[in-house]
Length: 113
Length: 109
Image (cartoon, rainbow over all chains, first blue to last red; front, top):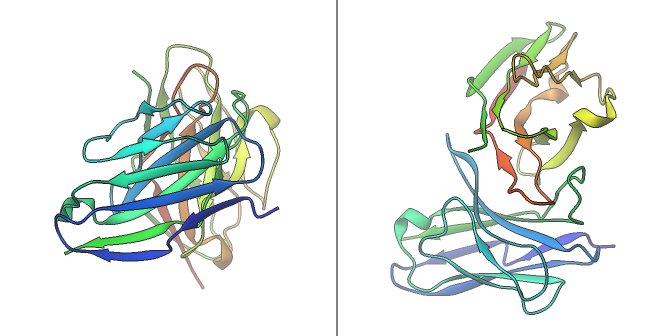
């Protein structure tokens, strides 16, 4: 099992460019999450999904869109990148029970200049 | 609204000293609490969860519902414990997971 993987690992964008981050999990998990990690701010939830075809907003959804067309994949899109979106992005998944732990991907380091 | 507070951004101790990383939570229901650890440039991974009441790598955490706390403790810190620690209120079911801002633990030799 690869667990949770993220593509790409690093990316540099110019302001206004768009990109999509891909998260894939092979654990048949129902729930998937996108977080951003910033110094002093910890982990903040951007969007999440409780199953294929569903998405919902988290704490900091503005400037991002997501899609969950397949159960194993959760895509995070930036339509028009801004310097404030410079961050490390983590994807996570869990089976969906209240006692379940989250499994995290290795992260994507994004810099917007 | 649910909230997790980790009051210390940084905790610096010497090897062999006791460690306590504080975590307080706010949640109206019955909480499910976790501690995650992130070693340098690695992904977050579960350290322990309150329901299992276990000790992992010498760390323990007790849920105190009266004080709404879930502090992480270790009697004798090791250099390899240096990492970022996140307290989290569990997700799944009908609510959204909430993470604290994290505490960076540095253990000096």
